[in-house]
Length: 119
Image (cartoon, rainbow, N blue to C red; front, side, top):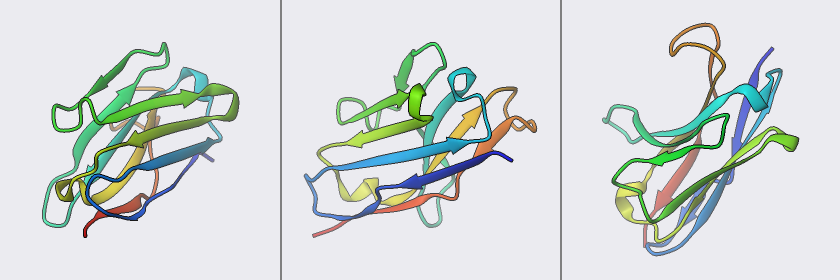
């Protein structure tokens, strides 16, 4: 059974930082493409950043230069370092890992962790 468990969310003031973690189990993590998404109330799910199994990274324009995605294959964990946070970054952040096509049975999601940016 594949599980993705996010942690590290919380309340932070504008300009602050948070580091999200996503611990994976039941999956050959080193072969998975991983990503972070977010969803704010009333909005559609939004892609934030991805890091492929071979290490290639990419970011949405809204977070480029402020967020950094990384992974530790030895510990089956993907991270999202978020700096200079803004109120518009407030959302539930979800971890995604895929070892197959999107929306297939090899496309996995965590439950999410809440990030709130407010003074």
